[in-house]
Image (cartoon, rainbow, N blue to C red):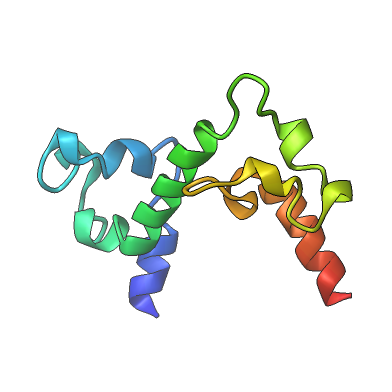
Length: 108
């Protein structure tokens, strides 16, 4: 529980995992980010790296005629336009707001 509490409180006041966990800044990310219990191992967890990976993919979802409006339109299906998706791009990653809507609808 303590480990999760630390992990959940690492990223405040402009301190971001994108900056602090960047391995180009050193083998343990940016050393200036860490103090006490807040260190690379407690803050840059597999969960954080997965979120960073999803964010990087999300930033490159849309290109040219492949747009959010076209691909995330849930009137085309519960995963938007199926023609838009090929790994690593998928509805869940590129259309998080629409995914929440579909999930909420499925639960009701």
